[in-house]
Every structure is written in C-alpha cells, then in structure tokens.
Length: 222
Ligand SMILES: Nc1ncnc2c1ncn2[C@@H]1O[C@H](COP(=O)(O)OP(=O)(O)OP(=O)(O)O)[C@@H](O)[C@H]1O
Image 1 (cartoon, rainbow, N blue to C red):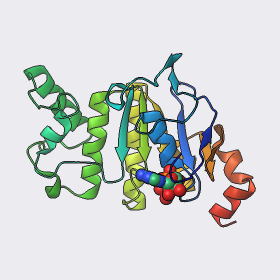
Image 2: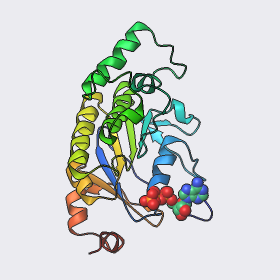
Image 3: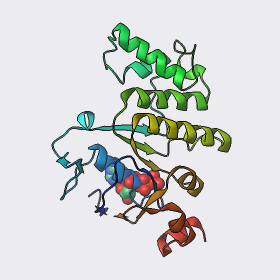
Image 4: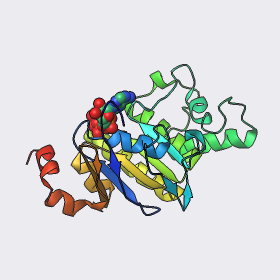
C-alpha cells in the first residue's frame, strides 16, 4: 500500500466502544486511522459506518474527528478561533455558535482563556483546547493518534478522564493509538493489536496484555 508496506484489516467495531490501538513502531497503527478517516484509500475492500460505505466520502464529510499529538492548533489564532474553526473554517460564527465555543471552553476548564493564543497556554491546556474542538464537533467517531504522549503521567491521566467524559457526552466511538499499555488499561476495555501490517480484531484489553501473542510480547519487552 505504501512503499511496499502491506496492510490488512478485517474487523468491526461496536458503536460507542472505546478501543486502544497498540503495536510496534511502523506496524501500521496510524495507517489504520488514515484509512478510517479517508486520508488513505485501501487498494481493495471498504470502510463502512452504520451500513453505509464511506469509500466515496471525503475526509471532511466522514463522521470522524481526529486528534494528533501536536494538537494541530494554529499559533496565530486565539483559542476561541482555533475551536471555532471546527464549526466554520471561515470563522464567521453567528452568536449561537460563539456561545457554543465559550460553552465548550468552560467545559474543558479553560474559562476566561478564549482570547489567548496557543503559545500562552501550557501543554495540558493546549490538549484541553484540542478536546474542546472535538467536543464541539461531536462527530460519532473519534480517532486519536498518541494524543497525550508529550504529557506527564498525572496530566495524561487527567486528559484521559476528560476524553472519557467527552466520549460519554457525545456518544462517540473512540479509537486511540498509544504506546503506553497503561493508557489502554485505563481507557479502553478492548484493544486492537497491529503487528507488521496485520490488524487484529478488538480483544479484551486485560486478556491481551496479560497473555500477549509473541509479536506483542516482544513489543512490551516481556
Ligand atoms: N506518508 C507515507 N508514505 C509512505 N510510507 C509511509 C507513509 N507513512 C507511513 N509509511 C509507512 O507505512 C508503514 C506503517 O506506518 P504507520 O505510520 O502506520 O505506523 P505506526 O504503527 O503508526 O508507527 P509509529 O508507532 O512509529 O507511529 C511504515 O512502514 C511506514 O514507513
């Protein structure tokens, strides 16, 4: 699929599930999210959501929001504007939309900070901005690629909790790539193992981590 990298996935995910995606570096975890998000087209097969084939649906029209490690905040825009982009790319928000932006800013604990720029926030606060955008968009599927890898353990735990709250509030199905088995344990009752381009169906997280197959055992250093 990419420079000779072969990737195969055959799985279904229950709506509302919270799923971790783990596996060695270069195994295809980000590729899986890109295929679901529509940034990469499979050579064969399809991705469907609630029975509808998404093949012809562009990334922006898919029922998906994305969160990456760098949080993709625009440095020249304020926090309010960064969040408002999720509603209207040209930022011409009506009064109701502006109120919605302020509401989610408060919901993630950043009240009073909407006119600051990203550089004036801590790493944890920047993660909150990215989560506020996700909350506002409220798409049914949330794809996260090592979203909190740069944060310390306490802050990461706090963000995972906030993420869980947001997923509950928006009824989202969540797939989160992580290199930290502790994240999988605390956040996801099911985990997808990706090993050398092969995507395994979701398995109960505790069982998978307690008796890992060989590829995962090597990755975990056991
Ligand atoms: N834009 C690209 N063009 C070509 N090949 C790519 C591209 N991005 C990734 N690859 C290749 O696809 C394979 C899978 O990469 P992918 O990013 O999905 O792995 P990953 O499991 O997310 O890794 P990591 O944990 O290091 O982020 C790798 O062999 C990688 O070199």
